[in-house]
Image (tube, rainbow, N blue to C red; front, side, top):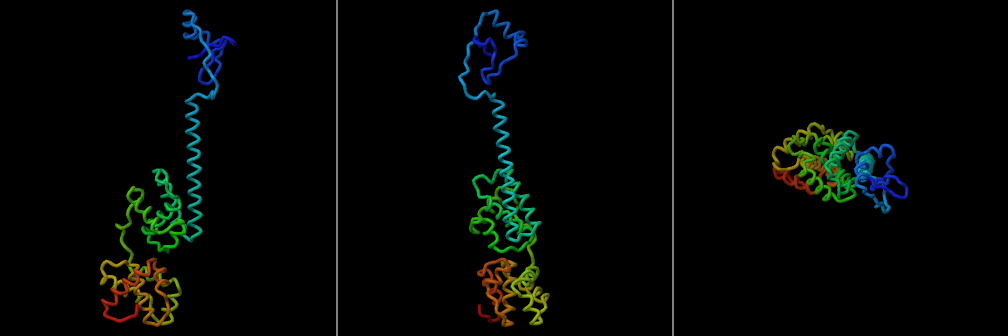
Length: 268
């Protein structure tokens, strides 16, 4: 309700201090009614903000939206820079950024490290697309341990932001053998020993059919290591395991089961 100021003779708004025009205000029913009742209005404004509450709320909401959008763009730019600096393929980067936007819309980034969430999304995309990445890449992107990345990955699975990649058809060891051979100079060793890579791949698939419950990558790494040992090539287990994207312990376990099935002797 407008307030009449006796010192100026104006009607002002008690919320924002707005001075109402004189002519339209004279014709309002409120003023005519107050004149008939001889009601006096007194000044109640005591200073402070003169912005109406509705305008102030809209301003705060707009400022929050601007801050949120700028924060999201900052996270996306930082994620692109981290992924590109670690040699992640471009199509994988774009898919991770799309999932990161979904995480932000679900408000799951609050209270969590954006780098760890980015690494967990990278882990999901690499599993679903069959892209072999070294465990060190996830740790570099996250700036934390692989255990923390796996914990964040499980949280995203439980929240429904990402779907489990276990339903996808697993890769065959023969496909992983080709990936391993392209690293650490293993392909050149096979060529020098006149060992066809296709023969190694077929052997890996047959070994995988006999080793139930073993990882395809672990079986592929074990087959490659076994053939290299038979040719007296010097390659450490850690190097082959790193090329396959598994731990040396996984390689040793698969190799132990493999030599038991084949009934051969090899020093592990």
